[in-house]
Image 1 (tube, one colour):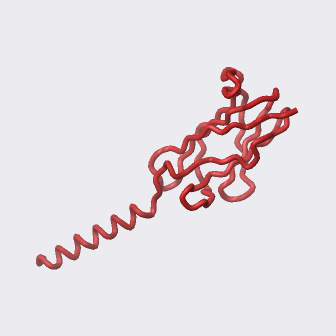
Image 2 (tube, rainbow, N blue to C red; image 1 turned 180 degrees about the vertical axis):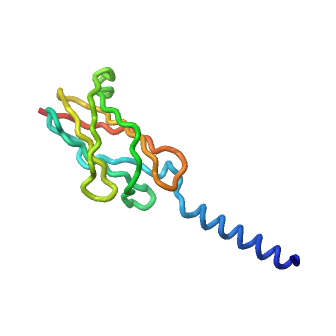
Image 3 (spheres, one colour; image 1 turned 30 degrees about the vertical axis):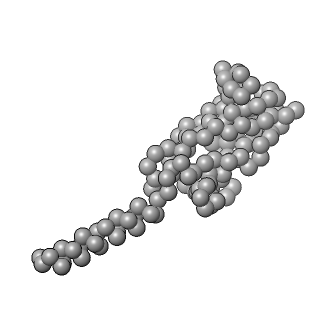
Length: 132
């Protein structure tokens, strides 16, 4: 190959790498947000969250949720944990969880997720208030 052809191939490779890198956001740009910050106390209550790209505000569908925990850590009772069941979202980018909010107070929903095409893990702790 001539020097000019090598330079063109190298330039094309650099442009391709730059475009590929630009297609992905930093994992820190993603966060879970509560649809509603309060629920009623009781069994089988549903909490809905959205996973969003903070830079665009767009909801992110098809994330793989692999870590879910709900406890009363905000009120100093992290040992007061309850079972959480993942449910299908009602629209793209929403994720729903069913749980027993056995007592009034602040409950911490800890989530871990993988976003398709991204490296790293989205981790958030959201506070849901259970009211009588």
